[in-house]
Length: 337
Image (cartoon, rainbow, N blue to C red; front, side, top):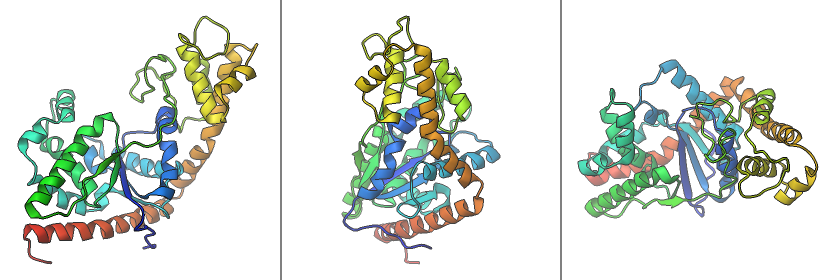
């Protein structure tokens, strides 16, 4: 196992992603692009949350493939296995072990009020399983197994983090102060990228229109084709203004990937039509994402290196979390191993 280079002077930040598909351009420019720099400021732990994914029925071969791709994508987007801990959730048994103990400090009523349980139960009425009900406890264990200080969250995760804090607080009251109360981390946000077909809505991988969303692993021709079909307006002038949602969206994207201000973009395309502009945006985005695509392809062609990384990452994760879980076991009264 390579040396764990965590500093005692830095706060620990933990983030996990489910292997549910490739990042969109919106995911990348809005958040993922900014994750890499966090490694200089924090001790970072990143994991692919494959245990969480099976609350919904999965095809085993697809899950295995998607999980490996998600791991490779983290590295391709700038997560460095030498600076951060990168692993698969299922490769660290301390998560489910701690989850059982924490579940005994969680009230049934708390779990029954979880919004995502209600939502997913409605969507998957034929598979309302116990894991779907208790997975917020496993999520709390993911965080508390490392005594994480900070957790990057979106609006849909606030309730889960609050539950993790409640569980930690209840454990501390019962057994003595031990767990940190994790705080939400609001990372620096990048551009808010909208749908290419309905620029009043955020870009989403679940959009039924295949031309509405750019995936960061789309090839150059696909990216350019989708931008050429992007919805604009009846005007012909490339300018940022109210009522020009489609052009505003394209200008924002072009600005982020080229580093040019909106004013510079307007000057560059003064007197040019929307066709030229959409082509330029497509080419700029494709070129911007090329290093990510190339790195991802290289990683997927080197399974031995990936295995070396995730095995090493799991060992580091186990080392950190085992210390925490061992102390938890002692506090609740289990006989030492």
